[in-house]
Each structure stands twice: as structure tokens, then as C-alpha cells.
Amino acid sequence: MAIDWSSFLPTLLATFVGIGLAFLLDEIYNRRFEKKQARRLLFLLKDDIEANIDLLTQLRNDLTNPSYTVFYNLRLVVWNSITSNLISVLKNPAIIKDISKFYYELHHVARKVDQAFKLIYSPNPLTQDALNRKIELVTSINQHVPGILEGRSCKSPQAILAEIDCLIKELK
Image 1: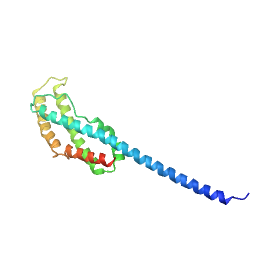
Image 2: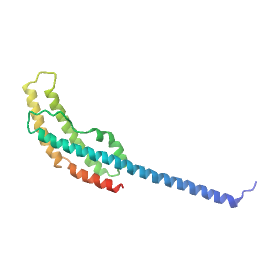
Image 3: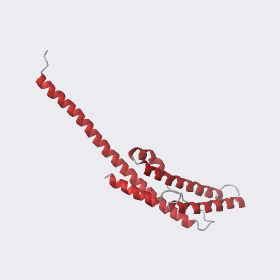
Image 4: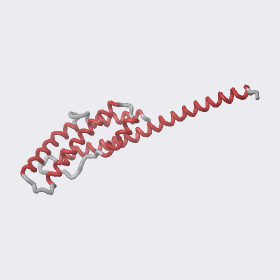
């Protein structure tokens, strides 16, 4: 059986072009999907950081009275749940590092708030030592929170938000 080269070569060429086009279209689709995913995650993160700025400000104001007990906590769930996805879609290690440091500081403050709460609402009788420890924790929180808000212990949340806004614009 003889090969009909006049129809075989165009068919072979069309097959390779089709396969190449399919790979190209798949790559374009994946890039668009990654951009959408990154934008979605950045909007979630931006909302979360703004909420935490408000909570830190409220915490700073509420704890001007050392005997005040905080009944709320910082928002840490979004960062904890999107970190791995954000790292995979964002190719900017510097911003991830800045956000990680910010959330590390938030976790630190949240632990102090939790400890102060547990001291007051412990099933054990409230002792003078427990009250003194709570005052130490409140003092520590009062020193820690301005450092976060003003960018002394990590990049300021406002600067991080500005970087996130730039990234969102780049991903349009």
C-alpha cells in the first residue's frame, strides 16, 4: 500500500499545529485562572487586614483601662486558610514575607489576649498573682499593638495594603 504524500503531509502538519494550539490555549486559560485566583485571595486578605487594623485600634482603645477584659479576638482564619494558595499564585516573596510578619505579630497579640481572658475566667479562684499577671499582659499588649499599627515591629498594615492594591491592579 502506497502512502499518499499529498494528503499525509498536510494532515500531519495540521495535527501538530492543532496540538500546539491546544497547549497554547491551555496555558492562556491557566494564566487567566491563576490571575483570577490571586485577585480573589488578595481581596480576601485585604478585607481581613482592614478588619484587623480596626480590631487592633479597638484593642488599643479598650485597654487604656488595665482592668478591662477583652471579649473579642483578632481575625486570623483567612490568613491561616489561604497561605499555601497565596504562595502558589503570587510570585512575589517580599510581599508574602511582609504579610507573614504582620500575621505573626497578630498571632502573638492574640495569644496574650487569650491568656489574659483565661486568667480572669479561670475555674480557679482569682488570686492577686493572676491579677498581676493580667496587668502585665495588658501592659505588654498596650506596648505591642502600637508597634504593629505604626510599623515598628513589622511593615505597617497600611503599607501592606498599598502593596496589595498594587498587586491587584497588576493582575487586571
